[in-house]
Image (tube, rainbow, N blue to C red; front, side, top):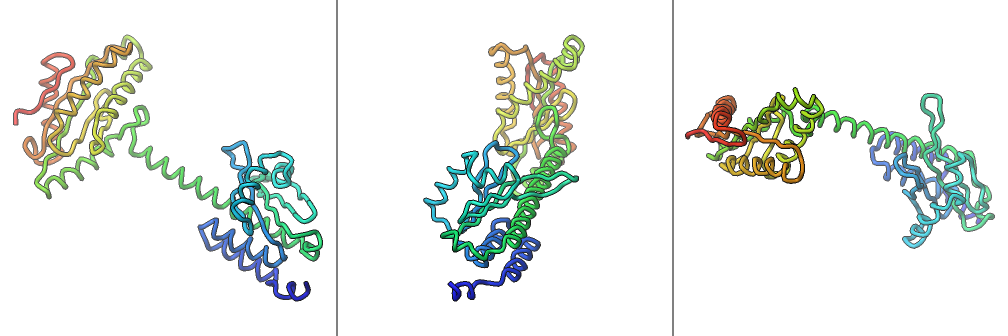
Length: 327
């Protein structure tokens, strides 16, 4: 026993290595592997396990282990669902649990003067005698570093999610969920540049909701919003994966369709709008104008203008019609 203890790494050296791993790595699992693995070796433990409480889940979840085979991991994962399990109890009560050959420490961080429990970490030895000499203060320091590492990873995840949300918001129409004019302009320029290089075509279609002003006047803004979302839903379902559809104005939508399939997609959209009434929905119709690059325009502005000219012809022809430019 004395010889085995003499071969253990120095706890302070192990703590320094673990702290460095947490401070300098964005990989939570890798940092925990270094920190907890060194701690297990330093105190002569045979295994360690971390159970975390996810704010979005009611039950604790076993997220990290060292020294356990797959069968033991599966058994422990099922066991932590029991409110009386030491890992679960320590996390819930934010207090140490001394279970003889196992010591469980809560993972706690402070924010805004309030303590927040994240979960718990358990260190296990073959027997109570095997645990003798393990420094509880050292293991508490390890638990604190684990808590910091977990909290840091969660904060980074939250920041990334918010950044993604703001990025999506900057390119999305909030009412319909479709692309906004900014996204449409960028996609159209990219598609025109690609078609120009490859000698291909790009179709642009503008859709206008017939008598939308009357809908707002008679039913109010909420009724208008329902119509806009209904049309947007049909558009999103009718276009191809390579197409981009955006809200283009108060009651207009615009489609960028690589190739010459603009009329085909536009007619599919009009059929989908007509089918809304068949399902008991409101009576909605839209008119559409379609233009093609490079036949009807040599740049974004001229192609959109051509599509609008075609839309005006469709409007003059009656509700629910689609027209293409003469070219």
